[in-house]
Image 1 (cartoon, one colour):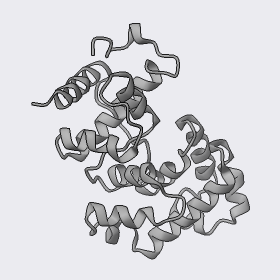
Image 2 (cartoon, helix red, strand yellow):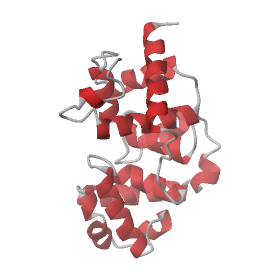
Image 3 (tube, rainbow, N blue to C red):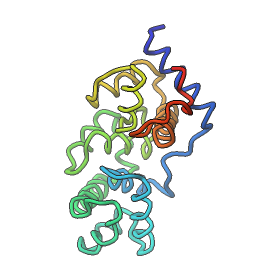
Length: 211
């Protein structure tokens, strides 16, 4: 077994034992997962929660609700998530994409990489957003890389790369091809970065101190 593969398995085991089972992505339905994936771009999840709460208050936290809402109103409701001018249009774009392509029932018939390519052609959808949608809304086995992932891998000497696809393949080449595993691993890394591997790290208290 390669050193990287063993190290990734050790990290997962330690974090799973420390934090336990993760329930991520937090959402009531698949529309909300997609909406959250767009809103979380360049902001903390706590801000996304405030924006989603506003959308639910006005019963527009759905693809149809977003398409039927004036963009000026949409901008106002998602202000807590930041970059609301761009994100309002991105939400319109992704909602239109799902409606025009038969939503989850029809889109789920595509294989992983064909669907990924279609998502990446939607204005406002980058790698992290597309992969979050694929993993959490479609239950497809692809690893999501975010700023937390880069930080944890870099600080634990697994790689010094910040390239999204390269970091993604470190996991996908060395872990089982399993959507549940990827979702759990990603969530555990998020918890680690939020609690210990911060911008100013708390290394002495971190469960990965020995790695």
